Amino acid sequence: GLRVSVWLVLALLAGACDDGGTRPAQVLAATDTADQTMYGMETLIEDAGRRKNRVLADTAYLYEASQTLEFRTLTVEFFDPKGNSTATLTSRQGTYWPQQRRMEAREDVRILFTDGRRLTAEVLRFDQEANEVTTDRPFEFERPDGVLRGNGFRSDPEFTTIRVEQPTGEQRDG
Image (cartoon, rainbow, N blue to C red; front, top):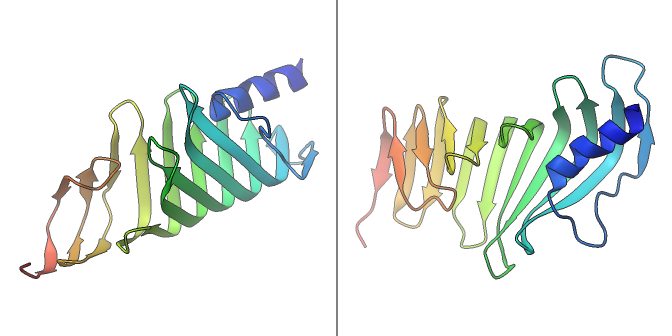
């Protein structure tokens, strides 16, 4: 029934979770169009037994028919293959499509990298199949060699290779 398929979608989101799994503080049937509303949602996403992401949201809305999760006040922590934190993304809203393995963060998107780099944008998209992060909106990326700005980019998830659309900004030598 409904409860089984709801947890199936969450299992798609979480992949293989650790012992803590998905821990919503409360799960309530939504009165609007969402099939379920979760408050204080937190889940770990692992791949082949390695921690990849920790996803937290003040509120998560599950839409069964489209197998979509909508997040409000989203935080995603990223980990390297050794399990060390590498960056934290925050945004006001986000959407996750488990079937397509795509995620979008919207409104006041910020990524703070543990090495001091910072990225700000209004929209960021992650496509797991293509293994890339993109935006088609203005962004600012602060790095040790300068500030990169543009009206869109494509990058690998580690932000080591970035192709910028309509670049502006400055780069320092060194």
